[in-house]
Amino acid sequence: MIKRENNIFKAISEGRAPIGFFNYIKDPTIQYIAGSIGMDFTIIDTEHAVMDRETVEIMVMAAELNNVTPLVRLPDVIPWQMRSLVEMGVKGVLIPHVHDGETALKAQRALRYPPNGTASTCRSNHADGFRPQNWQEYMKEAEKVSFIAMIEDPEAIDHLEEIIAVLKPGRDIVMFGKADYGQALGGLREDGTFPEEVQEGYLKTIEICKKHNIWFMACPSAPATGQKPEHVQKVIDEGGSIVCLNTDQLVIADALDQIVSKCKNMRLA
Image (cartoon, rainbow, N blue to C red; front, side, top):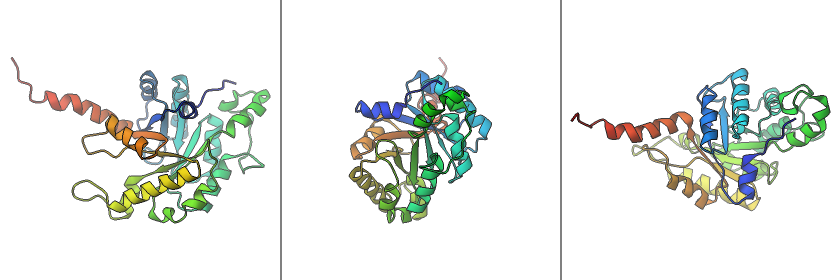
């Protein structure tokens, strides 16, 4: 059994905010690129990108091989899929639209083995190296898997205390999704910004997370021209612990645009 360090835990213990990205591109090459530039983690997406289990497992293995900590976003609390992800060796499972304590508790218990949860057991899995003698060590590692509760609905703000009550400091994470939260409040304005209530909910979530010593993750707010280091710094300055960039698709498009947009008017000599 190979124990792979959790880059998120390591970076925070060293006083640095870990940086990652949402993985939508269904090609393991993206994990090799992420590792080569020193990305800390990847959130392999099955909500919007709709990757099947085989693709997710390939992405997880590619991330591990390149020292990128693999996390996965599911579309909902699906207990058997959450247990399967733990068996793959993911270091965290992100659940969108966690709007109350009951949803948070259901997700938390689905990730844990008895007596702390409801996950069923199988000693033939990727995370324990397919060796029954590794089971006790695997169980210790499985207990460290992060539950990441995504706050995306205005009603969740009224239930933040009960959501955070089922999270464990030093392991679990809260993420705030400004896009869905803003859409629930009426969507983007004509200038591309969200209503003020979005920032209010965002800052309140940070405040409550800090009070309970729960790590906070967010994507940097940025104009249509793309994310830049100063946008990452703003998340950290606001109280964020972990920063997740846009999807790999958007990051690549922004990076290419920085080159191509400046080349379109180049004239032949």
